[in-house]
Image (cartoon, rainbow, N blue to C red):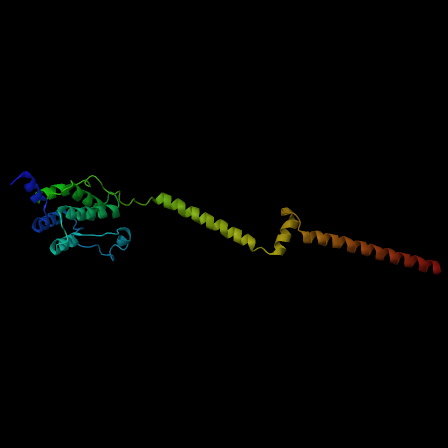
Length: 214
């Protein structure tokens, strides 16, 4: 058999080899985190973050149903499965580390199963960063900032609820410029005072006249 034909034979999808590879990956998965689909009751937000979930049970089903047409199709799903775990889990935790170990070991498992692909495992050096751990100090500062803004807004709202009488009292107390109504009141008071003075003068004149008559 020529070298080209031998290579072509190695590249042809073989369901028996593919199943053997899945078994090898399952054994290498020490935490059994890739065996079955993620339970949304256990991890509620998983399917909100991971849009193309896949596990070894899904891969086995696709092998059995004849979905895969090449080794590259199989490898693509296996890489997707591992990268999903690296993306979802916090970098450095045990789940992330388990996925990272399996990703590093995948080329060796492919070789042991005698499965070759047209393209090399170009994805082997790529690893999603994972979700960063919450910076609690930052969250605390942000929470305090929100509370300060809330208090400020509440104070502004309280100022708007001050009655007109209270505002007038504040102005008269020297906290502000007298309102227009207060100026009117002052002017009216002056007018009243003048009127009272006129009345008093009239009364005095009447008394003088009466005295002269007497």
